[in-house]
Image (cartoon, rainbow, N blue to C red):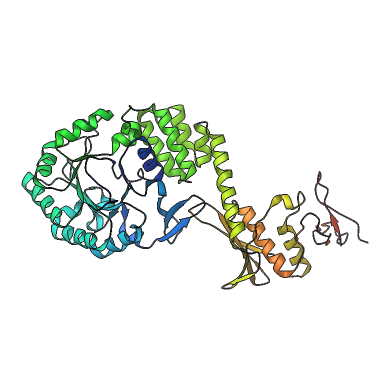
Length: 472
């Protein structure tokens, strides 16, 4: 291979695993000694709809779906070691996805071995094994269409001859390596792996063969990885469940206590704002038969990464990380956009943030805007708020007098986003917003509900509820 291209000779890899092979687990495996890490299988149709987004806050590259879900997240740390695995049954779609991600990954892989329905429907996964012509078309299209290595992962066929014949045909497409899961399509992890099939394949082709399927009987310690490689005659070894249960299996110095591994994983999940339900799923897989322990029950009950952090005593790490990310977000936003009105379609925007310390206690821009709308006899402000997936930030649009206003900056909470939208509206209208040091406008005044008239000036006491001054 050319210099700088990923090699699949004599490597140990984290296998692609649905819901497990997300960024935190991949980084954890690399830390512990894995040479190559595969992402979970991602379907071509969904990936083709994604936009590539540079996330400066998390320092990642995100591939974001139209509904704002982050389908794939990667970072510089793994760029030279991560393989993007896709589910596909169409050469053109496969190429479109490969070209979308090729600048951010080290190689692309086609899943031709998963027997689960979510993978086989539409002719993907193990369903491809019965269509060698399509296999060849997909792989040739990818090999000639992208600048990074292309690989595939298969299961063994009903006979040794069929398996060898298919892999030889795969080799002729120009792929860099082939991973072989040593079980038949209808076999499951409880069935023994067929090392003789992998060995026959390795002897029949010149490209690297990566042996997979040894977690049940063969690989219990780091030293077992080499024994499994020898037993299969393969160039390399790929680990799935054994690595999922304890990723420190990749450590040549020996495995770490599970508690330490889970803590290391959770820190990455916090640092990269991993989806909380994905975090919980991976931790439960590590806990295995201890999932009903007090810790396991606390993890299962958690709904957020903050709650999961509490279960592991990482509240302070979580708090500090969130503060660091918010500080980075604030710095990026304050330095990138001027504070002036801009027309964005039918919405007027400004790059402003709501800073709570700039306003007296109990005073907010939303209150000023509400009172202004009452004074002007227009409908009360209506707020519409959205949250984006990549960093869970919020942005709100307020409608006042049939015109829309919002801040172009994203806030850490829904309430702050609404306040920022109110600030934009007030500043565009030239109306006071209640900041400390601002001349008393008399706007913020609750009307007396008892029918004693209305206040023209209003003063808040910091230590009490809001009160109206008597009319002049």
